[in-house]
Image (cartoon, rainbow, N blue to C red; front, side):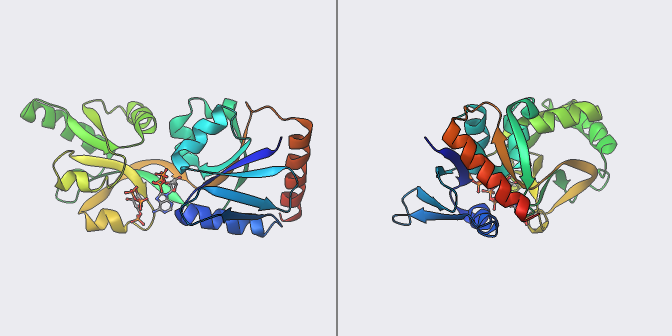
Length: 232
Ligand SMILES: Nc1ncnc2c1ncn2[C@@H]1O[C@H](COP(=O)(O)OP(=O)(O)OP(=O)(O)O)[C@@H](O)[C@H]1O
Ligand SMILES: O=P(O)(O)OC[C@H]1O[C@H](OP(=O)(O)OP(=O)(O)O)[C@H](O)[C@@H]1O
């Protein structure tokens, strides 16, 4: 049996993860055609690469189907209740930096803080007869954050992508989404709430606390940890 490492199957996270491991003497590569989700590992015996969607890596770690996985802190904390009991962070990888934030339309001139939002949400409900809609894919994190902030007059609407477009499309009044450069927010005429930072995220290497580690797999993990230690 081999130590299974889950890595996002495409885009910026995959490439930077490959570079991060390469610097530690572990070569990860996609094999087969461009469209085939197969991978190979060189540099650590009995280690296997599993290419997965970034959003599914937390669940696979929690189910013990992979031993290690690379994905953002945001996705682990969103998808796994009491995540520390199910996974351990082995290393922050120093890329994939993104902030989960709350943003409202720029033309809401009197809404700049959570307190302003609370007032606006109550007024919105009174005026429209339904709660203000916040589009997001981060349901758990946003709910917890708003509960702590004392904001209650809202409803979440699910948005799995192009979230900033929901305001223009009139399926939501505001959004909770990841931002990095801020360009997508600006382009969609949205502004951050001053105290609306829900979470700071970055790509992280996680170890499953649930997976079984057979002797070969334990040996592979120790080899990898030694290589990582050498590069600190
Ligand atoms: N603009 C960005 N800059 C940096 N990191 C980002 C950015 N957008 C998203 N991320 C991070 O990348 C990770 C994967 O994001 P996302 O869930 O959008 O994946 P995806 O590319 O849609 O993949 P999939 O749909 O296959 O899960 C998350 O941890 C997220 O925080
Ligand atoms: O602050 P910025 O640098 O503009 O980046 C933020 C954007 O990046 C992510 O989207 P992604 O490209 O992953 O597409 P998505 O809408 O499908 O999630 C995120 O959801 C934002 O929309």
